Image 1 (tube, rainbow, N blue to C red):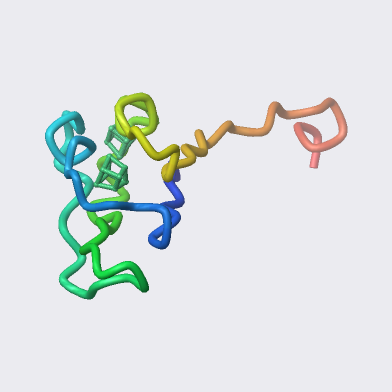
Image 2 (image 1 turned 30 degrees about the vertical axis):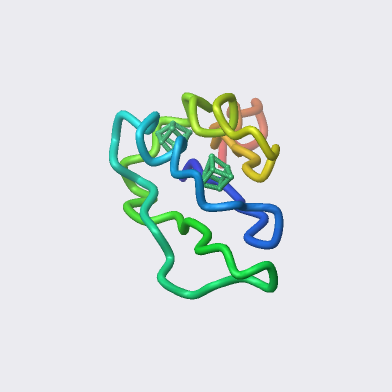
Length: 80
Ligand code: SF4
Ligand code: SF4
């Protein structure tokens, strides 16, 4: 499954990523970080298409996107 990691201490709560996500996978967290900002959290992980728009718009580089890649079958595993 695709996933994103949010550095909640970097996040300043601008919510550009919420606006950018075409799948509504990101929402406000509701708990302030050490700086008093309200960071975002990743929800609806099953919907994430790993488009990386959230990471691209984040001005604080607080989001990292991981795309799930299916392992190719080797001759050995295909025979098993
Ligand atoms: S990678 Fe794309 S689909 Fe996934 S959370 Fe970010 S903007 Fe949304
Ligand atoms: S765009 Fe970055 S700084 Fe703004 S709310 Fe999203 S993660 Fe936080």
